[in-house]
Length: 323
Image: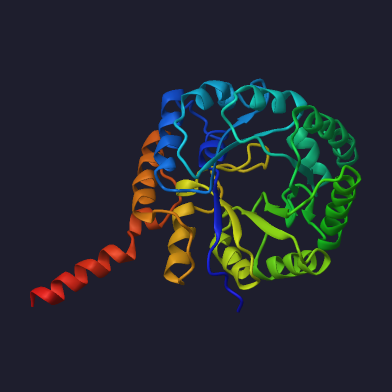
């Protein structure tokens, strides 16, 4: 096992969680959630999404949310966007750490449902996105593949197909002299299992050994933490997650399925194995419970209910000392 000594966690709850909530969440509550997460010392918090309110009305207040948050030192505040118009909206806030990524979906069917574009059309649109990056002085550092492990509409996705798509994006990046340091593999619909993680991550590591890998894992079928552990064994040290397990994709065809792996569960597992995260788990558990109150329904995170083991260790030690 080649477990890393420390990992980086990108907290996506404010964006992933809010985009799928059926009942509108008040803008002030979205801001409060971001501000509470800022107290947990994350490397990055993904705040919102600049997409069409016609298709994702939950994100109609993106500018207001960004304007209202309080930035904390040491944390990057990012957002996602699907086109040049969304990129411009993000830049115009003058408050976000706007990053560039060249992204594609491995499933033709899901690409059309999620973005209304085929894979070929997405690659053509990427050229326009690059023009937008150049206009705003943004240099992409990441390539990303969604539905990299499987798709509810298309079935299993071949690892060789994913590697081929990454290669096309890498070629585009090289043509524009972008230094790609990160490759993101997203299990958008929860098809991965530990063996699939080892297979695809291994192929990517063999092809691009100097690039870091980020995993965006969903816990749709209860495999999220097992998949994270399998990746840790391969030295992966960069993960996306969402507080309390918020989130999910509105175009994945699910009803009430869990979303991303719960951040506090991932942090707890890593800390128990001696892997540092830099995240304040005690504070994060409070935020997870509050996130559940904000959305008004149960969320799938487990450690927020079972409790931090250190609190039990302290209680046990106190009991022994009192004897």
